[in-house]
Structure formats: structure tokens, C-alpha cells
Length: 205
Image (cartoon, rainbow, N blue to C red; front, side, top):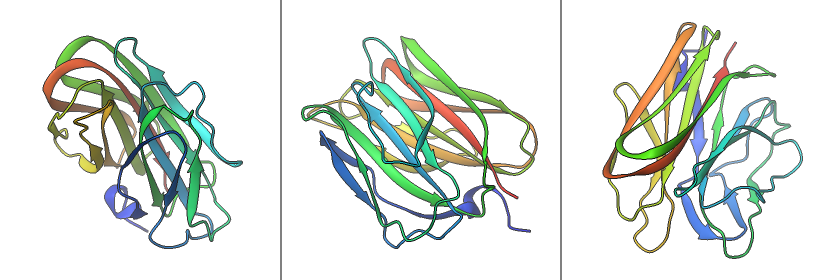
């Protein structure tokens, strides 16, 4: 059997920060049957539009901070090289595209979202899952410039964006799921602020 967690990561883009619509392009075409995931941090995601086949697993907006989301495309048909993420023209957004395999055809096993309405440097996402094997993915954002992020113990950083001229700043991490139970990540930011956080668990065979 394939090992769970970090070994499921096939490829990823760098985190892309821009305003408005952008195209996220993988280093190589996707493999049929794999899972594609987009992690997003933005001032607002109410107008976020993804191509056909994509579903938002979890999203949250924290007033006075930002919004974050995890979207996924399970059992993709293969040959996908890029994904267009549509946002309003002046909407600042950080986003990252990644590919994971092997993942089950209906993989979403648990999600949760956190409205971090109190300023903090210790920022937490937590989810319960019944999956016995797979990967947990988190996304955090905060409305501050130039933070330095430290992932939680046992978590690996997927991507990060620390913006000096516009918000949001953003980090996404992942961790092996090896048994059913509670999966929690507490990210440490160098800047105390309100934040938004989401977590999703995807099961592997």
C-alpha cells in the first residue's frame, strides 16, 4: 500500500499572489484519478469562481481579517495543466494548486473552519475524521504585512505568502492521516492579528 500523508503529494505550484483572476499552472499535466486541491486566502471569497468539476470543501470569513478556502477536484480526468481562479478585478488573493495521489474517488472525509475574531499569534484549525489513511490540509490567512509563519509540530508547509504591500498573508500546511481521530494544527505567526482558518481531510485507499 502507498504510504499516507506527505508521500501523497505529487506536485504543486508556488503560492501566487495577485489581484483579480489568475491562472495556476502545474509543473506537469495531472494524472487521471488524482486529487487536485486549491488553497486560497483573500480579502473576500464571496465572488470566487472555479471551473466545472471543482467544489469548495471548506471556507470561512473573519470580519476585520480575511477569508480562506480549500477547494478540490476529485478523480480528475487527467491532462490538466492549469486552473483559472476567477476573482473580481481588484480583489487581492493568494492561491496555490497541488496534486495528490492515490486518493479515493470520493475523498472528502472531514472539514472545519475557524473564525479567529480575537487577535492572536497562535492560530488554530481542528477537525475530526474517521479516515484511517490520507492527508489533512490546512489554510490560514490574516490581514497583516510581513508575518513569519511557523507550522505546527508534525505539519509540513505546502506554501506561504507574506505580503508587504497588500493583504492577506497566507500559509497552507499538510500532515499524514494515519488513524481516525482529531487532527489539529496551531500555526504561529510573528504578528498578532485576527485570522481565518480551514482544514480538510482527504482519504487514500
